[in-house]
Image 1 (cartoon, helix red, strand yellow):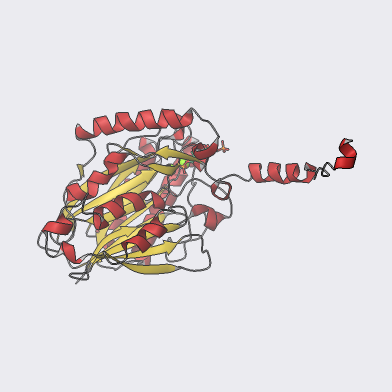
Image 2 (cartoon, protein in one colour):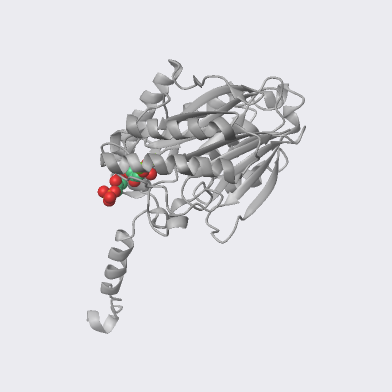
Amino acid sequence: MKLTLSVIKADIGSIGGHIGPSRKLLDAVKALVAERGKVDLLDHTVGSTGDDIAILMTHRHGAGSPIVHGLAWEAFVAGAQVAKEQGLYGAGQDLLKDAFSGNVHGMGPAAAELEIEERPNEPFLLFAADKTDPGAFNFPLYLAFVDAMNTPGLILSPKISQGFRFVIMDVNHTTGDRVIELLAPEQIYDIAALLRDPERYVVESVWSRATGEQAVAVATSRLHNIAGRYTGKDDPVMLVRTQMNFPATGEVLAPFAAGHYVAGGMRGSHNMPLMPVALGTTTSYFDGPPLVTCAAFCVHEGRLTEPLDAFSHPFWDEVRHNVTRKAVDMRRQGFFGAAMLPMGELEYTGISEKLATLDKAFKIRPPVTRADAA
Ligand code: 13P
Ligand code: 13P
Ligand code: MG
Ligand code: MG
């Protein structure tokens, strides 16, 4: 029977603005998952990245299960209650609906799920990012699954060199899931043409063409499409299976050394570089910089190992210094040009109201004619 890995994450309140959850809040979430998980889950673990809490669960109920989604929802509701009692900022921020309706999709929390035939050795990575959106994973996924300069496995391994199938979602389409499937390597320029616009086109999943197995699941929800107003960034999670028929763990981690610019940071409205950080790291400079954690696991018959922290290695210290430099450089230009997101992506309506008022005050100046000049 297939094993399902489900990671469901939400921001349900944090200390000191959007920095990180309180110990008491985390404990409330953990306690509920542990209690309910005895019956409904094979295993689980709970962690935080910035002000977001991710619940990783293994089970046999399949993807989108009301039992598993309901359990996560209840855990977040319990945590939000503690957040309210403690006066945390943004208590219940990502719980956008009052009543649970069978699945967290469209309700605020983000979910990434993999239904797999467990391999004898099953290594996988859980990425969680704060102060950014799911398009942040376009760049590392393109390099890891398409580019032999990053992933020598694409040349060296016969299974991997058969390539991968990308499922890409148009996240601006709000009345249903608008997706396209493209094959690497034949269609890599088509894949590139879409992924260059990470606010609109987002990798949802990646599949091995050699075996048909799913390698990647990304949470693609867009909070402002659900709430109709800004309620926080979409802060995505992603599961990636590694080794054997998939890129090696190191090949999946390598692209993060670039510290690429992503949408996020202050008020969800800026371009800032993505910093790979240790598990549990909180947010700081300019409500950022956007952060990403990576917990590495193996799973056997549904039982998880302890997480290993993939970005706590000393190698990443230099990357973090570089990201700090890039972040400060970008902030030097304030709201000008590339520093702030384009109008359509700004998470606040204040500026559009201001521009609408100013627009009415514009006047067309009559052209100066030769007679006027004389
Ligand atoms: P407020 O406008 O409620 O202060 O929240 C915005 C915010 O904290 C984004 O940084
Ligand atoms: P979160 O989405 O992490 O709550 O951040 C909100 C924000 O706008 C911070 O500036
Ligand atoms: Mg928050
Ligand atoms: Mg957050």
